[in-house]
Image 1 (spheres, rainbow, N blue to C red):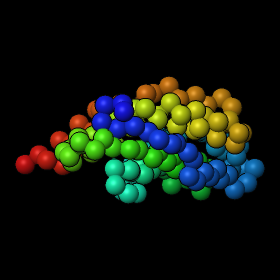
Image 2: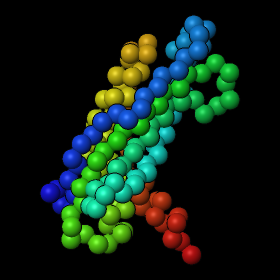
Image 3: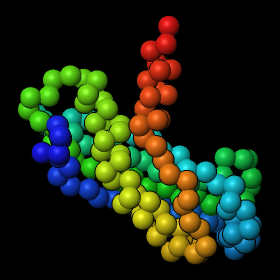
Image 4: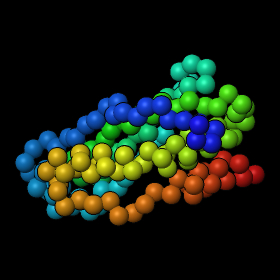
Length: 145
């Protein structure tokens, strides 16, 4: 196993690209630079030592524009946890950081393909997501007294 876990499978659970009409497409094409990437991660036990990790990706305009497109998908990983791992904090970090770092190149490729196939071929993702940093910030916010 890779450290305390092994990814047994990865797949797209659900995918959606929504652009309601041609006017919206033209508007979004000119303004897609404002769109932001949202990531939400949740997990659930499947059975002993197996976890389903769902990484939800949403690329959207957070402003209240009438004309906007939505691009989203759920990327699922089935993760086997080492039988000797008992510490819940280590398990949390595996799900939120280690698995994410391993699968994110696939997620980026999926998002780029979704955007290109939706008619936005000039889109590139240049900013890298630092899951370690996000985890530390979240952890500190949760446990600061």
